[in-house]
Image (cartoon, rainbow, N blue to C red):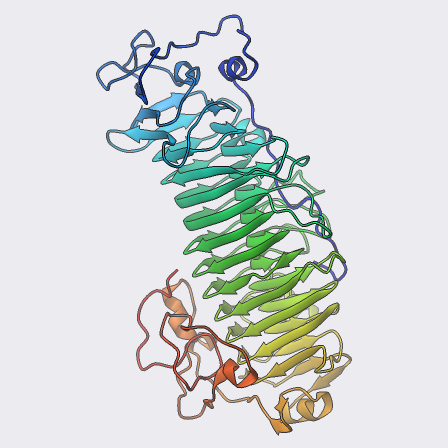
Length: 571
């Protein structure tokens, strides 16, 4: 996005439709024509079964006497420990809604799942498949949710909503082994704009959200208040989620659409071993916002680790990147991730609001390969914004090649490995490998003094012409730039290098997680070893990108040199 731009309304808020049976539960009033199945007067919890060969006159309490329709089951008032089981491989029209007063607890959750062989399919008509409103203690497992053309505009695969007054979060949400496609949003978890409370203890695992219109997986909450930050959602773990082909809405020109995973108003969250790819191709937001593969905003204490984000697109002139820490993010970390072949930056750290709430973040041990394919005004790693402070960028590997940059060549520009724009202070860039085949290694909007931004111990390698942009000046050698800028020094001694790290990725494609091995240095005899980021007072953590334990002597980059590198980088 352009300098000074502010991203607005960066979440998708789909309207969940309340079924007629749910209105009975919500209001206590009967709706003409709606039959509410009787629940046993005592005992429980109960397990209810639904199958296309059943009968709604059955009691529904065994596989031999199941109900027939999802609409009939939707009328049940579920209590703690109840289970609703849909026959695997069968397709059910309609939707399911759980309202306040239903559901359970962590000890006795209400479970909605398949039974038998395969996933049951819920196919609503123009609405959300499963809506959980103002309650929690819910587990949703082993289902396939498929929207129609109308649901693509106004439905959600699984929607959790909290509009209750007060600040008490609703606890225990589990979504496991679920597929959601053909909706406005695959899965969304939100808090009403008038309340600060959302959900806590949320686990979303082994989920696939794809071919949705606005996002695969999204969390959102009320507008951020820098004076009294209140995060709607707490204690999230998102693991092994696949978010792909969420296209974006070409009709939406006022807000961004087309992200894979978007986290807003969360605290204490982890996104682990997840993949976002081929999202955002049809997005059409305005000049100041666009989609990302995986990104965070208005949040604190978030970790993005061991993920991959690739071939994400933007239909506008901004964003379309792999990973991002956006407005008002604090005390968060992006580590051990792979970004490749995105329209925008591999890793973006951005603050467009003058709140001072974007601070104390870390970008470390990541790999970016051939990012900023469409938008050369970005780069592999990009950092900038209003009152952004205390950012550490270290032990990353960035490779930028000219191949595939037709638009950049036509414009006579090439994206840099690292781009630093104005508005920041307290930024430390240490022990990274920044490699290009002739494009700029660093592009800094201003000639930053070391008191605001410091670069030390980095390897700046170009297989073509060596070039670095520092404010209005251009430098052709590391020595010349060091002398003029006072960067790459420590205690009066020079740091940094321009040695060849021998990355196969400069010549060979990095097409998947396993291909990240092409970004491992193989010049142990020439690439200098020191204590890496430790030499500059930074604790680099326990392991490198591949999970290899760090020794006392380190070299620049995300992966430490090995004779043979095996594995798939954890992605």
